[in-house]
Amino acid sequence: MGNSRRGSTRLTGSESGELRYGGDFDNFLMKKALITGITGQDGSYLTELLLEKGYEVHGIIRRASNFNTGRIDHLYVDPHFDKTRLLLHYGDLTDSTALVKLLYELKPDEIYNLGAQSHVRVSFEVPESTGDIVGLGALRILEAIREADLVEKVRFYQASSSEMFGKVQEVPQTEKTPFWPRSPYGCAKVYAHWLTVNYRESYNLHASSGILFNHESPRRGETFVTRKITRAATRIKMGLQNKLFLGNLDAKRDWGYAKEYVEMMWLMLQQDQPDDYVVATGETHTVREFCEEAFGLLDLDWEEFVDYDKRYERPAEVDLLVGDPAKAKKQLGWEPKVGFKELVKIMVESDLALARKERAHREAEEKLDALEKEQAAAS
Image (cartoon, rainbow, N blue to C red; front, side):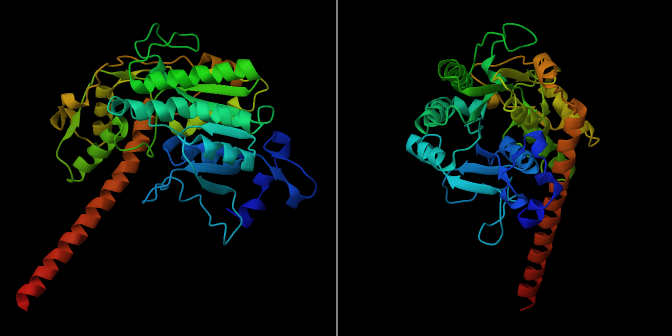
């Protein structure tokens, strides 16, 4: 990043709409994007994509005693030492004043609202904060856009979710399928989704929602079931773990590759007219199938290592999710390239590398402990 990237051919693509020209090369006016949830799985991939397209990217992060920027550390350049197109700002989706001030200051061209308490099972434990962040957080940003007088300038993306369909009313699910959420998280997402539609219709805001079905990657948090499976399978293979405990093995999900799905987010905001799109693969697989595929890649029998724990069951389960991405393909030319088996392989290979490092580190510590004991005994 910095001067070397700034002088690359990636910064000369003004004809593609990625940059606006303001005179000589040094005065290129880059599009400016603001991302909430920038440190998450989707936020990190979207940041990479936007930087590659020549954007100046701003992200909102919450103040904490520990840094939580691991997924974007490879992109960050300290502005004290080099020019950078990635800048982070302290803020929170629960703080409307901070959001308004930030929008006044930045005046972004595009806003991607990805921030959330996104663990569905946890939302039953913290329903109030989930609603505050996921539902009212979207409202605060939409109102901040109005307060900062950016309605005619900005384009807004809302991260909607397949969890809004919940107790599905038809298979597969489309943009017109009625919602029936089955969790506080799903309910909050429905509220945020309809707010986005309402502000689009009421104020002529260029606001679009991406109804993303489950999308995974090596950057997925380790408490989410897919990453929990691949992390455990590889650690078991390396002798670092003995068992994996899961809840409902029969739940069916439409799993895609997160890195591909962020491209759809960007595409939605490049259209002349805002709209809502289902982003999915059109295939569904059970958690059991995911286990079988992940353990199978490591020549392990998943049934020997996976046990059931009812604590991981949801109070109200979503049994089946499978999306129909026909509209996205027809209107935006988008379709997924990474299938189920390839996705699992990508995640297993990444976690296997981590498990090998973990075992090497543990073995080194054990050798050091043994040496210290020998030296203590000798003295």
